[in-house]
Length: 449
Image 1 (tube, rainbow, N blue to C red):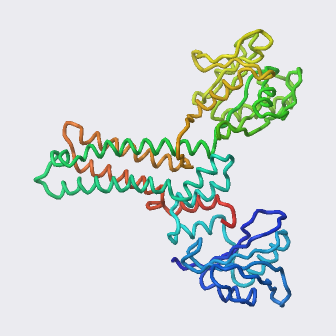
Image 2: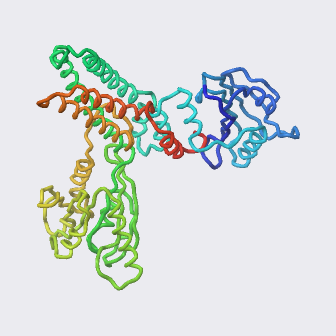
Image 3: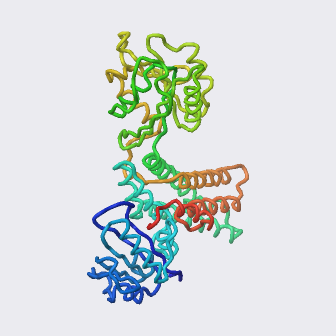
């Protein structure tokens, strides 16, 4: 256990509630508990207690729990004070803990201590925050799997295979009389190929998990009065946006988050893109372009009766090339067209009616496609840094394969690429992680975790 000062924080959400919890972590907390309650709690038993102020007055009454090190969340002595969940009561009780020598915990400091004391690895610690922030049932289930160590075990198995492969290669380097034929006889290259396949599989599962966590940001764009607000209302299943036949009704961005097969889709309705002398509408249009720049995909709505007009083509030319785009031919109910999906030269197109709902399911499936979602078992909740680390590992393993399959195999370079691949995987669980990165990761947690 790493010695540390005593920290305290309210662990329950702000606001009123039936029960509020204050968590305290440090070393030798039994004297702390006795001063606060006049009792010495039995480890892992609920103790009914009064919580006293410095003058002996009762601050609150509740339950005291004591978890001695190392069998606690942080690996240190931990106290949990369960009192009445009023914000004033919680603040009074927290202030008393600070008077007794604790300091206010930083965001994520409890989880950081758990990581530093070996109670969980970095991927598990991040899963704590991901579980709290989960926006869908699927994301929550995936976060629980990662918290229970499934992601870490998969990374550990890859590391074990890398270590065994490195042992073979470095043993060959230690004995100059051995050569590439020895590695072939030991199935080293078969192992390398198997490692590549496993890396690809775990990358796919982690990529699906990132989608569950962050979702897809989609902007509805187009000229005024083409049905953007109607489409937002249809996708959201509620009348979020005002719909009128008057062009320019939407002046500012409207946001809604929907779920499609557990994937959160953040839909943003923007002001109609056109030239205007209205100063307020101009501001809305400027904000629309900023939203488009930050999005993952754009739905360009056009009126199915007019098709893609020169004004629509001008909008298309201004869209960032990196964006996924879908052209939506709306209002097919007014021209007798059928709902369909078809390919165009620069995008996919969906014909639908936002008013009647025809073709909406085609759009939902297309959004899942451009997000890269497919049904996968045992998805890991993952973050961008996990994907980068896995991608780096894939590149190093691929380069290792190129080295030994080249005209002049260089076993030293082969061994070095395998070492770098192992180091990349170690960044996921925290085996190879810089202190400044740890600070960034844990600072994004909520206080009390």
